[in-house]
Length: 314
Ligand SMILES: Nc1ncnc2c1ncn2[C@@H]1O[C@H](COP(=O)(O)OP(=O)(O)O)[C@@H](O)[C@H]1O
Ligand SMILES: [Mg+2]
Image (cartoon, rainbow, N blue to C red):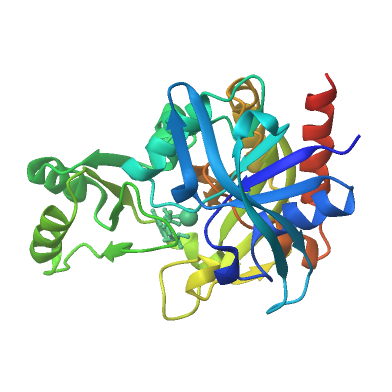
């Protein structure tokens, strides 16, 4: 049965068609005959207890430059949709949090993927601390004395924003690095939140593995190897995508995360693993599924729609 699907995402004219996971989900939904509507988060409105948005019908095509066509604007009650994909990119700030509060009102009439209340409660670099034995030594603070003590213990460290993404402002500080004081000051004036201090994992040069779980089950993976002159493996920072298999440790990590992810309605998640250490659980708008398919891996968009269709039937 065709579903009425709306996607809440960033402006579709600006996406990178080749790499965008939201776009892969749209192509697959359209191929299955589902009806698509599109809006950006700034078109949301909560009036009394009803959530409206001004949406436009959407058709997609896998051709950069002419990848979408939109219909007329129409103001609709979002409960008229069977499924809403919440897919705008971070920053995970109060604008993001506000959107989760609004979309939460639609459940259970409308299935929102991922579950907005649980997205709000699982900031990617905080959620991971619920699994301390799977992660590298990590400190979340803005307290100078705490950071100095951690640095004295671990020597080589990374400092990065707690709510960052795409590799922005991720720094490595070698044991004798004299820039530590200035970098601390810069972080302290730039961020109001605490930030992440983590043991530097030297095997990052072999890659940071993105593993996708669909409803808590392993679905596919891609290894991202940083450029020779950069710490960061993110594909938007020039990290090279390569096909990969899971190690025993990585299978164990997936098995541990599966049940909590499923319980929380976090249907489409991407975890990051460096040298067997879990560093992030991405729940907002994970990427990687187009790269995985291009490298000969499974069609994860199809797996996600199989799951959504089953949930809407059940
Ligand atoms: N502890 C670490 N050791 C080595 N490299 C790291 C570490 N933390 C982050 N990096 C590098 O920086 C990149 C981005 O960091 P990450 O924690 O994934 O934040 P983001 O949310 O910005 O992707 C990683 O893909 C990896 O290449
Ligand atoms: Mg990352």
